Length: 132
Ligand SMILES: [Zn+2]
Image (cartoon, rainbow, N blue to C red):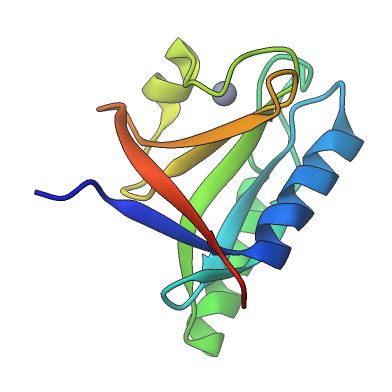
C-alpha cells in the first residue's frame, strides 16, 4: 500500500510555522482543516498544566471547532503541535494520548522540520505542501 500523504495548502502550512514559533518557548496545538487538502490552520488553546513540556487542546474549543466544521462541510484533517526544544518525532506521551485516526503533525522548532505520524502506530505520513 502506498504511503499515506497529508496535503496542506501553503498558507496553512506557513501560518502553522509562524504561530508555533510565536508561542515559543511553549508548546502550541491546533488542527489542519479543509476538504481534501487542508486550507486552514486553526489554533486551539493549550490547557496543559505545564505548556512548556506538554500540550492538551482545550476540549471546549475543539468541540466548537468540530461543530463549525460540520456546518461548513469541512473536516479535521490532522492535528499539529510543536516541540519547542525537541525533535519532530512523537514523544511517549504523544503516543499514549493520541485518540484520533488522523495524522499528528509534529513541528520540531529547533530542527526547523515537521513530520506527520499516525499514532500510536508511528506510521509516518508524508506531507505535501501545495499552492492553493
Ligand atoms: Zn509532542
